[in-house]
Image (cartoon, rainbow, N blue to C red; front, side, top):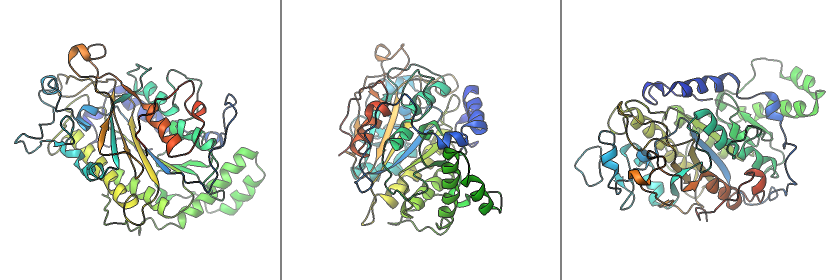
Length: 430
């Protein structure tokens, strides 16, 4: 899995976040997880549309660490914003500051680090959902909040599979001959895809290989193995050969798009290469960490920790949008971005922000009703806050994910993918 680099997030975040990051690196996945099928408690499944149906490829991006939605999409129109963030607020669009924001409407703006997304927004293919989060879970623990978001159900430690994995498990493959249906560009399997059929974690697809020259011997060995293990192993070996056939170093993005040579840029470029390579990929997942900004948040300006992260993040997504979603060779792809929770409304004494509640989501694609900020704004005056300190959640993250699953992935199994939850669709998708 990709882990926060030193410049991502001041001081590396809280101790819980650092410990959680180490645990992910050590043991997020196993061969049995790769081979996992539908859990025994699943209700009867109605398989989603057949392989010749018009389903989007879905790209899931997780901003790990609790990204500050009040900086990513700042509410300059709320009179309380500048009072509660005297040193870290993004300057108003009509100010003379060189670090001023860019207005999206008469209330919200993008900080300088996020302006790379402005073309997609103005083209109507980027939607923003503010005050989004986990409505029925109030956990401020990274470990718990990440787990609940990824599994699509709060406060349940018995559920091991992820929401996107359950979509795949209840859908016919787009390409029945594909050796891999989903990939996570991480060192271990994230819970979002845990239990998904023909799903592998591949940190660097360009270098995906076995540390052994004896592939034929391994094929013979696994040919007689226990059925789930045999299928997973043989699919993995076949995927290695598929990856070798893709020209990752020589990939030429379309429409003049340029990916930066950094973690996020390289991840999105690799996903684009696999999509263009027509290998049957249906879903991809990327982690981008370092949003646990307790100290010296650096929302704007050169060298600011969060400003640097936002620039890398937004430029990678903008390049992917220009490359894959534009022009005559545009591909049916929907990208969704979420984080486990937002940050406290008030800045702390270290010019940072502590764990909060509601944050922001981004949804990008040709079939998105973009160019607007969705969500009911609850306000950030003290009397409007949850527990007197946090932005209230007015849109459950599952509402957006469930609408994506039904509208763009043609999967009717809502109760399976998001157990014990009846989503409220917000009209984000065409």
